[in-house]
Each structure stands twice: as structure tokens, then as C-alpha cells.
Image (cartoon, rainbow, N blue to C red; front, side, top):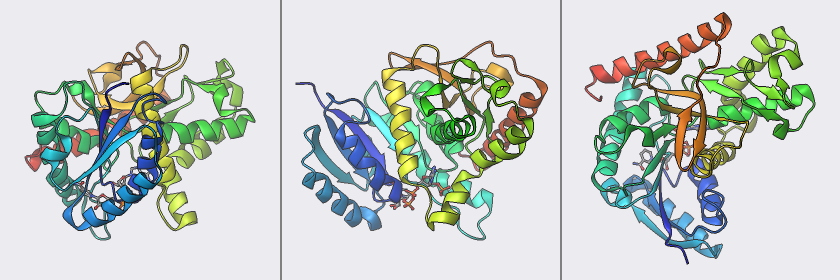
Length: 328
Ligand code: NDP
């Protein structure tokens, strides 16, 4: 039997955590033959709720789940961890300035980065889901100097999946017919879902759809504002779809992208496509053997250039703001 892979989930008692943990334990994260050990990190007030979730995990009798441990101390929660899913974050509340939000999250992601640096396994892979995800990932990464920077990623896979669903519906095809979709930039309203390099059943997606008005005025805003539309309809934020995207992100990272396709991940920029080096920005990436690579050589037209630049400018501003706070 294989040694279990240790997976740490922060904010485990939150609603994304509730949708995420059971799928990890069922084998959806790493594969149907990989046993997992779960470590749940919560703030002290939420430990009791996490214990309740752990009771339910026991009650599922998942064959692949080899144990659940609960912590309110990041150093202990990340000791020896192979996969870290950073979900818990400080939500923006009414009247909160962006600077306050960044500062509050700095108080969470700085110590978590330090704890990962101090004790995580050598092969650790980190996905940040908690918002503002790209900048939270940057803060954690900057406090983990001994961990290769490419191990810190932030989630734009939900945006990616939302975009695929919208195009498939518009074109009347299956989601599996959509390939090479890209989300560029920040996981925020400025993100740019790119159809110009995407394919529908092997043909250029923008040309196949052939509806520029829809692309600019329906598709892009629908994807970017989907989170708000779900809150409006459901009375609660998207949790199951966010959890599902987190599963997809790690599964693709570990198991690889298919030939002739790529995915979207926010990763540390090497300067590709004019994105300043060091920013954690979403790109088209392929993955293989647990490593990602930014897809090179795509031609970027003026429209796409403007959209990418706008989202990347927002990331630069967020980095400047956390720099002022001494967080990076
Ligand atoms: P959720 O589980 O709904 O969300 C957690 C984070 O994911 C939020 O930052 C949220 O951002 C973000 N997120 C990213 N994508 C999405 C999406 N598509 N839809 C919704 N959220 C998304 O929050 P809860 O409040 O239910 O739970 C948070 C938990 O985290 C609490 O149990 C809290 O105690 C815990 N926590 C733990 C910490 C720790 O372990 N050290 C630190 C801080 C909190 P957004 O706010 O923008 O929706």
C-alpha cells in the first residue's frame, strides 16, 4: 500500500471547506488509489465546528482516508504537508477599505507562509483559494524563501470552468469540446477570459461563435461577475463550485494536462506576456509530472493586450499596497 499523502486545508470549517473535504477524502483530489491524511486548520473559535466535520468524515468510512487531525496552530498543521489548500481568509465586510482587507489577510498568510517554510514536505504544493487569492499567495510565498516560488499558486480554475460552461452553452456543444481556454490576470472582476486562443471542437472559439457583441458584453462580464450572480440567486456564495475547482486545480497540477489542451492557474510570473516578474498572475499553463509551464508564443492582439494589462495593473497595485504594509 502507498504511504498517505498529507493534505492540509485551512478554513476547514467554512462552507468551501465543507464542500471540499469530502471530495478530497473520496479520492477526487489525487486519484482513486492514493490514500490521504487530512489536517484541518482553523481559528480557535471554529475548531469545534471542524471537529463536527471530522466526525462526519469518520462516518463516511472513506477507504482512502487514513486520518483526520485538527489544529489551531499553523506550524503544527503544515508540518510535513504535501498539499496545502489555503481556503480560510478574512472576508471583506461592509465599510472595510481594501487596505484593511489586505492587512487582515497579511496577518493570516504571512504566518502560514512561514509555517510552510519551516515544516512542509520538500514536495509541497500550495493552492490559495481565500481572497484576494493572488495577493494572499504572494504574501505567503514571500515568507517562504526556502520553498521554490513555483509551488505557490492561486486559483482561477473556477473562472476557467465558468467560462467553459458559458461558451459550451452558447455554441450548443459539450464542455469537453472546449479546449485552450485561458483566464489571464487577477481572480477579480478585472480578470480576462480569453476566447481568441480557445477552441471549440478543434476550431477557433471566437471565430466559431462569431458574435463580438456577445463576447465583449455578455461572455466576459458574465464570467467575471458570476460570483455575485450566485450570491444573488442562492443567498450564499458559491462554495461547491469553488471546492470543485480547487479539486480540479490540484488534480491537473499533479496528473498533467491533456495533449492539445491547457488550463488556467495563477502562478509566479517569469515576465511572460509582459506580466512583471514575481507577480502571481493567471496564465495559460500546461502541467506534467507535477510541474507547470506557461504556454509560450501566443499572439496577443490589441483587445486582449488591453484587458490583460488592466488586470495585471490591479495586481501591481495590490503588491504595492502590501509592500507599504511591510508584508512583502
Ligand atoms: P468560504 O469557505 O465560503 O470562503 C473562504 C474563502 O474562499 C474566502 O476568502 C472567499 O473569498 C474565498 N473564495 C474564493 N473563491 C470563491 C468563490 N468562488 N466563492 C466563494 N468564496 C470564494 O468562507 P466561510 O466564511 O464559510 O469560511 C471561512 C473559514 O475560514 C471560517 O471557518 C473561518 O474560521 C476560517 N478561517 C481560518 C483561518 C485559518 O485557518 N487560519 C483564517 C481565517 C479564516 P470571498 O470572501 O471573496 O468570498
